[in-house]
Amino acid sequence: MSSLILHGRRFFELQKWRHFRFAVNIVLQNESPFSSASSTLQDGRKGHNFTVSSYLVDSLGFTTKLAESISRKVSFNDKVNPDSVLSLLRVHRFTDSQISTIITDYPQVLVADAERSLAPKLQFLKSRGASTSELTEVLSKVPKILGSKKDKTLSRYYDFVKEIVQADKSSKFKKLSPSSSLLSQGSKQENKIRNIIVLRELGMPQKLLFSLLTSHVQFVCGKDKFEESLKKVLEMGFDPTTTTLSFVGALRMLYALSDKTIKARVEVYERLGFSVEDVWAIFKEWPIFLGYAEKNIADSIETFLELGFSRDEFVMTVKRHPQCLGLSAELVKKKTEFLVKEMGWPIKAVVSNPSVLGNSMEKRMVPRCNVIKALMSKGLLGSELPSIHSVLVCIDQVFLNKYVMKHDDEQLVAELMGIFSIGIWTVPRWQGVM
View 1 (cartoon, rainbow, N blue to C red):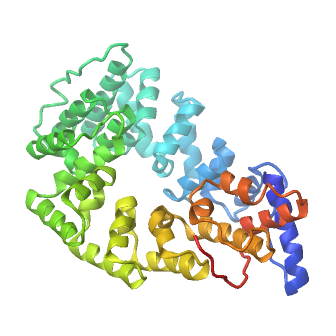
View 2: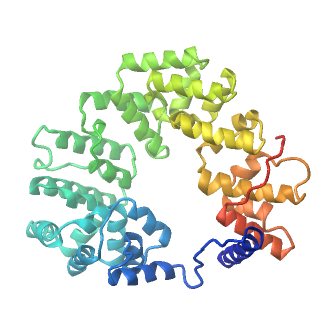
View 3: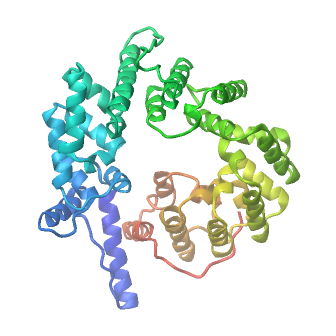
């Protein structure tokens, strides 16, 4: 597939040169997937073009995609500090796999001061009796506790994580009985540990428990309000073992909103045409639905109505894809106008497939629609525009198989792959139907 994309890019460049008399400089990766990243890092050693993602690929063997994702969370200009962090972890006998996990979950550790911050913390934990195997296992499970500023907080969280890890190794579920040192202050930390114990007993996965432990979200530090909110969430049918993220989202939302505010939000939706049952059904799918203020909701419906949606179509769109309420007016307008005015799909097609409003314009909408435009201009799709669902809802491979790879003409396939990869094909729009 990658070689075909490269061939398509070359073909497309040649066509542009012939027709438009100018060239676009495109870097083709002819070697391994890591070749360009590695060469960038070599430039970095000379003081030029050093990037976080190239460092992660070169030093830890991360994929380019993962490295680029992590590079959006942490920033450094050279490899001196991150190298010292990796060296310290290896000295303390963390395996390559554990180090990769630590960097993936808590990339900020790469900019920590290895000598003045990390080393003292590791030494402190060892001085309390932690063995090498225990230390590396616990910290690779929850590396974020290395960001604790106080020894007391570090030791408290470390001990709690250790208890969970050890208890979960048992073939039978083992209830936790935290030591008095963990539950002695009557503080937010104590409440957090108590609440996480409760969530663990309800079956919440270990990884999410640890994420909540090191987070700053308020609901997990509550006491009476936490218990009330948890009871409501369970009564609504949320399951912490299967609907984990929506469970946490619902718990957070009910904890943050008063009963008066929740009632007012439900009434706002009722005035727009939603039934009470609709509101709670959507809440179960997308808990933040109740978090939108009345003004945000009013602005959203105004945007949709200005674009030609009826009130009933707006309600149906939100029922099917409540996340669209969180989109900015600018994005909704830009995407809807592209789909309806540029491509020619009717509004009812968007209403039937509102998840397309969550698609990236640059990464999905434009490249795929450019392929469809090219095929239509060549008369290869008949007179009707394909359904919006078949073009924009499926994954890339399904789309390519249906509209690109099926053609016997290798030159055409290469051309379409070039259009799909570069996304700069333009032809006059036509009127199509769903």
